[in-house]
Image (tube, rainbow, N blue to C red; front, side):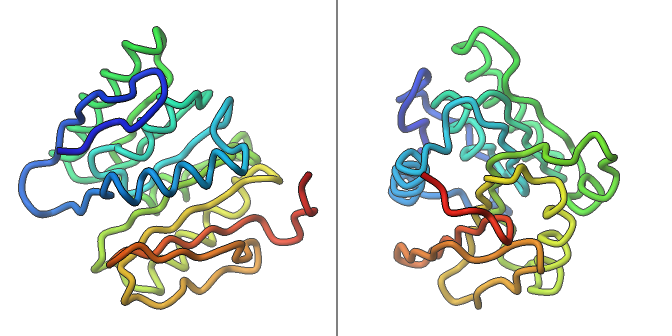
Length: 196
């Protein structure tokens, strides 16, 4: 059973999506991921977007650790319902509606964003289903670029057997880490100044 690892709601068990249509991030990978994000100062007061959210595990972990706002985007009806329930757990602990859920295809959600969405997100998780093709992933990354804050971090989680994403001109690879059958790629806006 998955759980929230740390923060205000640390230890809270998460509801899982029934069936095998989603692939939850393991607690081991989640702990390593959030340890890295914490060392990058990418958790407190950030605006988070969790695409292909599944159960919402990564987004609600961010909310538990102090994110200012979290949007979970999930198209599957059952998974979106689980996202709603997991969001409610963290929102109750935080005492406000920090986590919201959008039931939408990721491409549709990003394509319908307007000018107000420029510089909208500081931290983005993409944990797409393994069958998502590389061209489809590239399209999503391209749509995402203009909507990132200047110091944003994008985390792509895929099978260790998939190739590195084809980064659009708006993003560049920061780091890559492999954990068993999972690989994480960290990217940032292209031309981002070296941070302190």
